[in-house]
Image (cartoon, rainbow, N blue to C red):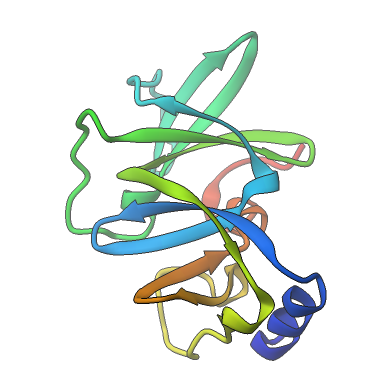
Length: 160
């Protein structure tokens, strides 16, 4: 699906709510309906031979959850863990995945008219996983299709 089709589909759905988070200097948004919970960062149990951006797994109330460090996945300049570092637990259909981000900003409702197609440039993010750009005042959000991003073959997460 091309960028214009994605924007058209999002616009026809009307205003949507996005959880916004920061990675380095950029602000991203993901569909709030995919978010199960937000937790403080705790070091996960490492998994041998996993890609470097998969930090390991945690036991979340009896469910083993892989933890993906989005800063490493997106080649951010630094990946420091501090009191603002959080893990967003995502419920993606039949899979639960945690993503490590620098901080969570807020939940924003974006009206359809504030959505724009993402420019067609080479990036570490698969272009199919970028829904578009959302703007609200001076803020510019990169809107991610987190389900597509987490199911990419490079993720090393075996399909359920």
